[in-house]
Image (cartoon, rainbow, N blue to C red; front, side, top):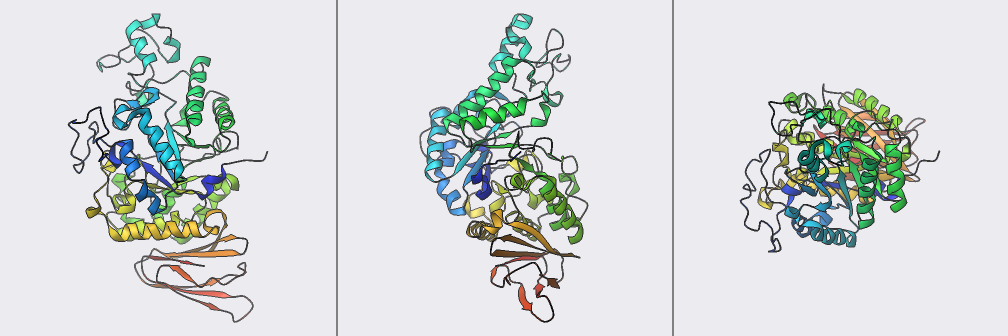
Length: 485
C-alpha cells in the first residue's frame, strides 16, 4: 500500500496556541463579557480562571506570526466549554462565544488562508462534558433520555457532581466531568464523523485528535480518515499518542502523531543533568536520564526506522506543549539547553511545532504555570526570538532541512553531527552539549559536496582532502551548535 500524507505539512512550521492565553483583542468588537473580571494577564494562571484571550486577538497578531515564519497554527480546543482549556466540550458546532464565536473564527480562518497559514483544530472525540446537551438530557431525564446509550452508564442514579457518591458512569481518567462516549453506538460514531466533516468543509486544514488511543472501536479511525480525506484530501490528521505509534501510523488512520519520542531524547541530550525531574517524572514521556551523543544518535536512528518515511515527514515534532512544562523550566533556566534543542527541532524531518511563548523565552512549570499569558514585548528574551527567527528562516530556505534524508555523521562524547541531503543539496548540523570547547574530525565519504558556508553558529570548520576521503574538521565552542551548507 502506498502511503499518502499531506504535502504542505512537510513544509510547515506550526505554532501551538492556547486561545485563552495568547492574545486579548485590543479592538472593541467583543459584545459578550466586554467588561468581564478576567484574571490579570500577567499574573500566574490558575486552574479554573480565564484571562480572556480571543480569536480576534489572534487575528491582530498574524503579522507577528508571519514575520516569525509561521505557516500553520494548531489551536487547543476552541468549542464552547466551561473550562479555560476547553477540553470539556459543550457544543461541537459552536466556537466559544468568549473567543468570538463562529463569526470570529470564520474571520480568522479567512485571514490565515489569505496569508497561506493553515489552521488545525483540536478534536476531543473520546469524551464530552457534563454540559454537553445529550449528556445533560440524561441528567434531566435519567433512563428515559433518548441518549442514554450515547454514554457508558452503569447504573442509576448517576451522580455528576457529588463526589460522596459513585458517578455510576464512565468518565475519562475517572473524571466525572468528562463522560466518555459509547463509540460502539452507531449514532455516536456518525455524530463524530459529521462534526469532523462539518469543520473540514467550513475550511479548517486538519484535526489534532485528543487521546485517540482511548477509542478502541474497530474501524473507527479508518472511517474517520476516509470521511475527512473525502472532504479534503490534503487535510492533516495528527494524533496525540506519546509513545510507539505504529498501530495508528499504517497509512489508514493518522498522518502523524505529536512526536514526544523526538522530544524526550532531545531534551535528555541537550539539557542532560539540568533536567528538573519534578517537571517530567509524572508525564508520559521520559526526557531523562541524561544522554551523550552516541546514545542520542541511537535513539534518533531507532525513531527514524519506526515509521515509513512518508509518515516521518508529517510527524508533529515538539519540545513542549500545554501538557508539559516548558523546556526552559525543565532545564532549570539554562538557555543554551533550549537553543540547542530548538536547533535540533528545526533541522529534523517532520513539521516542527513551537508552543506559544517559547520563542520569546516564556518560562512555565507544569500546568497551570505552563499556560501563562503571552508576555508583552518588553519582557521578551531578544536573543531567544532572534535565534528562532534565524532557524525558521533557514528551514524555509533549504529544502534539504524539510524533506532531505537524515544521516548521522558523528556521535561521540558531547558532539553530535548529522547531514540532511536532498539531491545535490547537503546541509550539515553539529552540536556540542559539553561545557568545554571540543574539536571533531569527521569522515564524510558519502557527501558529494563539502559544505563550508557557516549559516548558523560560530564554530570553525575546514575540510582536509589528504588521503582517500575528505574529512571535516570542526572546532565547536562549549554549549553550541552550527549549520553548514
